[in-house]
Image (cartoon, rainbow, N blue to C red):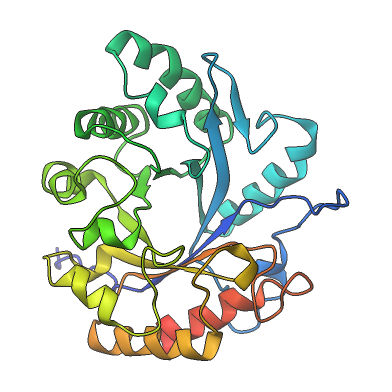
Length: 291
């Protein structure tokens, strides 16, 4: 038999989707990411945020409501459509609202109270992976235990990603408690990639310097997806598109296996803002794949 040829590496465009309804209650559809695409669909991966494990075991919310709440029905219907066309959909666990990882970082007995309902929720909604956004202290042993269980329960094809702030991969202070370099050494084979937050005073992507500082510590470019804000109202450190695309194009040119770009978040992404948020993804895809 002829040798199997792996497809060429292609940079990712990842979009987080947390604001599912506007303040007036109007549902924010993600379908335009597919239906309004001109030349190519603008994203490779979609991340549904944010899943929280609350104090009572089994009390899980997607933002403020149970994942199965009626208000989320349209969201899950649209998720199926994305998966049907080959786009992987992950859930994001944690984030700025703390507590989920503390509850998973206790004794084995406590872990068995909080983890199974999370596993069942992932199964129910047929997610392709889980993004672990650890913005609270967690032990290295605790995050390894969680990753190992996810892989045992869902298999090698299940995507496990993490979302550290940029300084975490630069050897500086960060939010997660554990050492990411140690985690990569011990469980790198189980981690698909990292969404690295270059915003909120943890880094800024006005030039390639911050990204290069990460690679200088031995990180592979294909595992480092740069995270940026899609709108100046979404945090501190937004970069105008013209400036951002220049940096991304330079990184792609220098690093053929450049990991890609992640945007927080979909509903008000520039340049289209709330009226045409899907335009951000198109610009990013053209930049990291064809720019």
